[in-house]
Structures are given as structure tokens and as C-alpha cells.
Length: 87
Image (cartoon, one colour):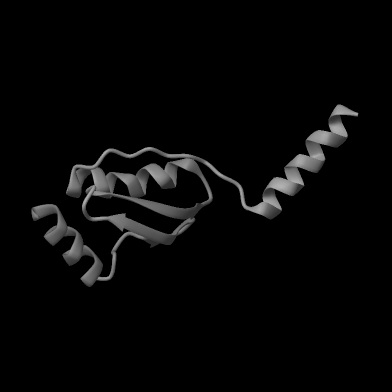
């Protein structure tokens, strides 16, 4: 439960590092039994994601997997652009 105590302290302390210029954690969910979790973040670049990730690797020893995704609006925009280019 050492990891759980460390995470509880992080959350109780205000989740320092979850927001900085060009980066913001929008939501985080955790699976205490599986000792893992997921975060939805907004970032102006991938460097900021790795900067934020280092907090988790250094302080909690977790492995990070990054999966870029689009909002519905972003998807429609790029979908229409690609469809128009292929016609």
C-alpha cells in the first residue's frame, strides 16, 4: 500500500504538476486494485506530455503509455480534410 499512500498524498497536496503552460490534466481515473490508472490530458506538444510523465516515473515508478487521440470535433475536421484531398 506504499504506492497508495504516496498517491493519496499527491492528491491531497493538490496534484502539483498537473497543469502548466501548454499542459493540463482534464481527468484522471485510478484502479487501486490493479495499481494503475489513466489520464486524459490536453497538451500543446508531446514534449509537455513526457515532462508530466516524468513525475509519475520518478515518484511512483510507473510505466507510461501515451496514446494520442482526437475529440469528435477534431476528428470531423481532419476526416473532411482527408476525404476532400482523396477526391
